[in-house]
Image 1 (cartoon, rainbow, N blue to C red):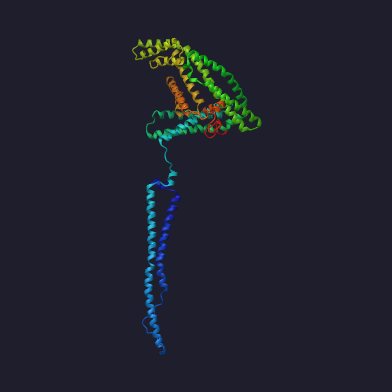
Image 2 (image 1 turned 30 degrees about the vertical axis):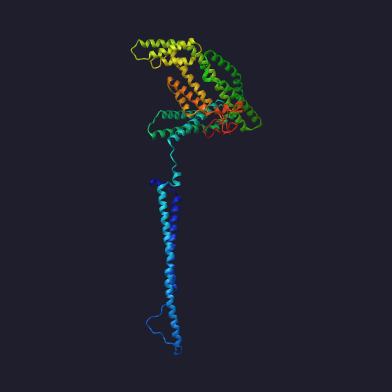
Length: 515
């Protein structure tokens, strides 16, 4: 009741006062109407005759006239008195009806206001105390905040590679990354059921939103400083040089991928399937935007120059990520193939040592895994990274594998999974949701065995998000211009037919400033 009173708007009191005033005014008017006939009758009564003394006699010759006149006047006065009494009774009826009506209206208004106050909250209270979002709505808000903050950090880090920024900009990006990591950690614990009480879980989601907002604020605060350094650099020439380098490199990467697929089978390179084609699409898009930026620079259109240059930089950077991912995987597959025989021998030696001790272990299952891997080596094409991962997992939990070739194999497969997941999320960030990003963030700080599992799960969820999202710019024209790829990659926001605004360095308030 106290909160309701405090939340009542001031104008509500004014409305109640007006209504009470109307009721009182109606009552006063009724009373005036009631009293007015009485006052009027009193004012119109003749002055009463003086009592007691005799009236002076008229002259004798007018005695008859006097008597006649007096009789007539007496009769008139008697008749007038009767009419006055009837008129005064009639005059009382209408005022009484008016008073009764005014009282009835006032009582009806009072009852209605009382019922309304008990049955619902007034508009003023609703605006002062907005409805509390449900846990589902709050989870949705926190997930959206994580995706936005992660996009801002990734885009800003990507843009920073094209400019010689000052220390304040670099510190802001680091601070934003720290806030984002904390937000992901809270989100991950929330998904694991910590905390358990409803109030604590709500506060955890509020903390996620707050951390993400602070990450964006850090980047927004340095957007102008970033632009100052970006404008002074010969960024267009650098972007054109990087474009030519990647265009010349694409054919060699394609050949290396084909040779690896032929030797080790499609499963060995499945993680980068289609990456070379996507990189070429990004370069096609970059061609048009680099030409646009050059034309705008020659014509003196600074805004158009910045839009074209930033879009080209984003596309070129993602083309580099895609081609780099293919090159790295090819190297990792070859390295894993070289490590695998020694890893098998080392794992078998460790299991043999465990059998000679009284310590509990799982040598039977491990023997089965190692035997299957040895059979694959002689059966034909196989996936060296996957085989090495199984060998490492076979001795996991037995107390072995902490040094030597087993440890080197564990580091290789974990690093490969982390980089593969991060690359995929980065070049498909226009479609990847919060859960995949959170798992990837958790993998970055986990133990090697857990990091490998989390990263692979993050890659799986991210792929599912991309397939579910689709691409509204998947038409033939969009594909030929490379527009579909850069929208999916988050270089453009995809809000308009031409791909929409290009995303720049900054947080939520400044990332659209290039239009």
